Length: 263
Image (cartoon, rainbow, N blue to C red; front, side):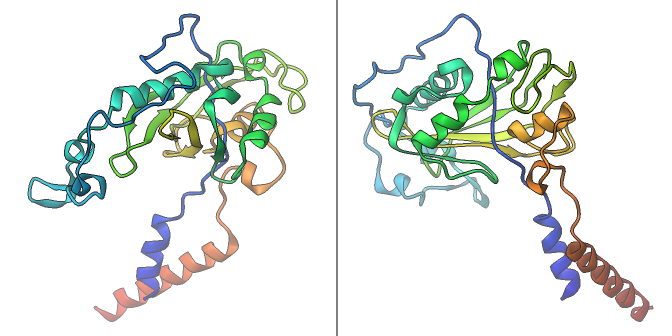
């Protein structure tokens, strides 16, 4: 039993860090074919059957471990949704902080930050000036895809790198001139029928061995990489707890005893 629990625990052992993704847009902005502000937007180009909408058309190729994404997203205007996501990310210096693009019931949810409401999010995001601190920052957004289970949700991956050649108050009043290389982080944007963002999730690291942020995502990772890590566990690289070390030790002991008894 302990051995089985040890295996299960290993699957959940990755410590998820905190919360921001950053993007410095290019001068050329595109409209992505999205509707004018205030107009109603249909996220599906045609009516969708109940079977597709409920996900019961998910199995394909005779295998229960794969879904038929095309069937589940039949009638969904994927290009328009991805266009909405890119428009949002390009707004307000790349932070997605344009209040006019946020639904009144907007929520921001990071691994340890949030949920934040609309006004809380706008206040928090407005207090961080990444563009000044990292003039050469590249967000490296890629892999935009519509969620087949939540067809009004767009997922994308952000990496990002840049040099801290400017101040980042109050965390780094003077430039450290250190280079930040972020790990890949999974993010998402959920839209209502009018094209406004209802939910924004960012900073979920998917490979903590990449980059120099100690496996942390968002602002906490950036601060750690420039030597200005914040003094609490959520803003520091993951460390094994004494309880987990004990659990692993007991699991290893049981495994060795089982091996000895089978000889």
